[in-house]
Amino acid sequence: MTDKPDLDHLRQWIGRTEEASDIVTAQLVKGLRATLFMEIGRPKAGDAAPFTAHWCLAQPVYPMSELGPDGHPARGGFPAAGAAGRGGCGPAASWNFLSRCASATR
Image (cartoon, rainbow, N blue to C red):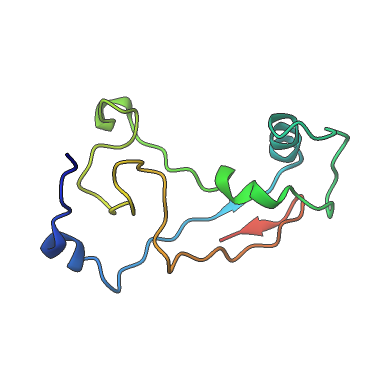
C-alpha cells in the first residue's frame, strides 16, 4: 500500500521555485566520467562535461541534525516529485547551464 500525497499541501508549492548555482569543475567531470565507466582523461576549461553532470551540481548542504532517517533533509521543505524516491524533479524542472568545464551553472 502506498501513501496518497497530500494534494492540498502540494498545491501550496504551485508557482514557487528553488534556485541554486554551482561550477562545473574538472575534478567533478573526472569523477563523473570514472563513475560512468568513461575515459577519465584530463578535462580542462571548455571541455564538454558528461550529459548527466547536472545530477552532481548544486547539491544542498544541511547539518547532520536536519537529516532524516533516509539521509535526505527531513521532509517538509521543497517537495520532491515521487516522494518515495526523493530524488526526482517535477515535469517543469529545467536546467539552465553550459555543460563545459569551468562554467558556472544555475
